[in-house]
Image (cartoon, rainbow, N blue to C red):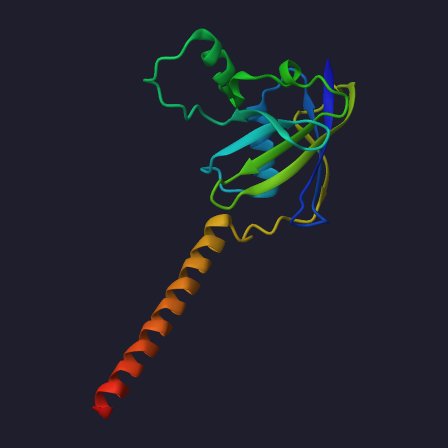
Length: 181
């Protein structure tokens, strides 16, 4: 049995590192559960893996659950292109085909916590070990990173404050003009 050794890091914390071995016949959901556990994430949040090219451009998504809405009629070709890959249904060996496969893992779509995952090597599994196997753990993630929604909310508040200040200045100018009349 083969195992995949992945190196996991984060752009949000340069010291964060995980090295995890996952068996070829294990699912992406098992890998996800290991990441949730080792990173101390809340278990109830949504997440996705994105298979990437060598430059980290997203190519294919593997989701925790199917979020597509049925109802629209599509031809078979459109359905095949949109076929959703679900973590619990996809084994690692079905997807991993590049010796340096790059994968993005996005957890909690409000905070957009993103991990960079790269296949380091394929090795013979030690069947006396329990997999997924965490080989290395350095540092923790900064889970309170600002999300796009936080930034958007702050921008709206700033715009609202500016609008209120302008309105107040106009009212004071109008009041001063009324006092002169």
